[in-house]
Image 1: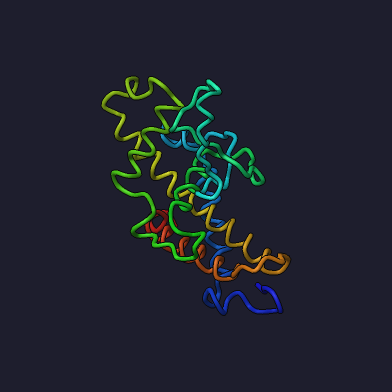
Image 2: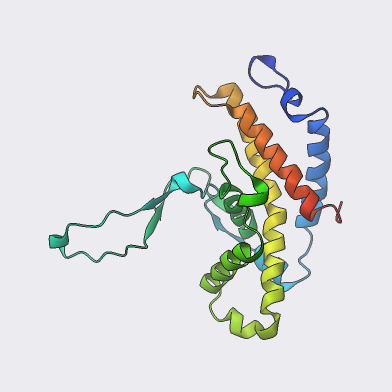
Length: 207
C-alpha cells in the first residue's frame, strides 16, 4: 500500500500489514455476518441509522437562550453535527466507533488500555443505550439482563474492529488527496494499532 509521494504504508505500520488486514477482514466478515445465535447478538447486529462519526468535535452543547425570551431550556441537551458519514449499519458498528472515539484519537495519542470503555463504564453506557432503545427490556429479561448486556458489549468490541479498519483506509486515502495539514499516515498507524489491540482481546478465540 502506498501513501503520498509513493511512501509505503508498511514502513510506518509494519511489514505485511496489507496481507494481515486482508486475512483479518475475511475472518471478521464471516463471523459478524453469521446468523445471530443469541438475543444480544440479534440486538447488536440490527440495522439502524448510524451517525458513524460521533466524537467530541461533533457533539455540541446548546447555549442558554435570553432569559427574556421565555424559551424552554434543557442544560443537558446536546446537538449532533456532521452527518457526512451517516448510513444504515448494524448498531454495534456505530457504538464501536463511538467507543474508539472516546480515546484521544483526534489528538493522535489514544491510550486504548486506559481510555477505551471497559468494565463498569462500558456496562453503564450499554445499559442506558438499551434502556432508551428498548424500554421495558430490563424487566422482560429479568435475571438474564446482565448476560444480555455483556453480550451486547462484546459485540460492540468486535464491531469496533470495523471502525479501526475503516478509518485506517480513510486516512491512507486522505494522505494522498487531502490538502489539509494533518498527519494522516500517523492516524492510520494509530488506528491499525488499535485494531491489533482489540483483535487480541476479542477475536483470538474466533480466528
